[in-house]
Length: 168
Image 1 (tube, helix red, strand yellow):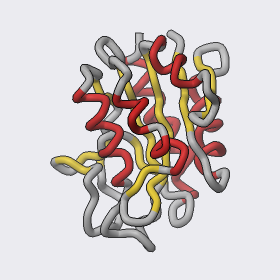
Image 2 (cartoon, helix red, strand yellow; image 1 turned 135 degrees about the horizontal axis):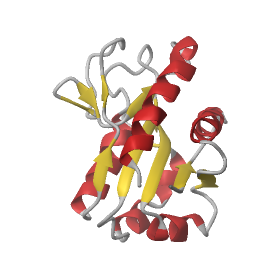
Image 3 (cartoon, one colour; image 1 turned 180 degrees about the horizontal axis):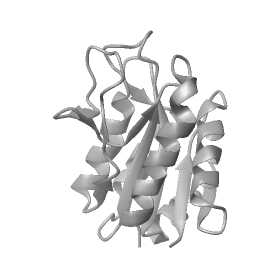
Image 4 (cartoon, rainbow, N blue to C red; image 1 turned 90 degrees about the horizontal axis):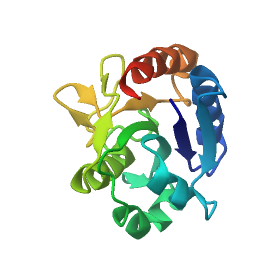
């Protein structure tokens, strides 16, 4: 199993969390790639197992590096790919658009033939609205480093253990 972990980070939080995901998979099983690096889109095109780590900003937008490449992301054929999405979000300051950036990416992946895996329960979070939640489950793993950093390691460990069973 080889997993490409793709991240975009404006403040360093998403990169910090992506490194935790890398350690949870084990460096022999995964590689870390910054979405702002030109070769990362080729990695996404050629990898069957992807973990995409992004944050939600403002009124539900994807992090700038992801957002800048949205048209390129739409040109990738995700058929045969398993894509897990990890979203950083702030439930206290942005309760109405909590983790919405995840939904943007999930829609792109699904509409281009990919399988979005790694859904998690929305229990334990406090927010009023999220496009990333469907039937009480998030489209992936949501991490709130601003308000629940004490739960980050446990959430990542449990999520990655589940993903290891789904990735081939």
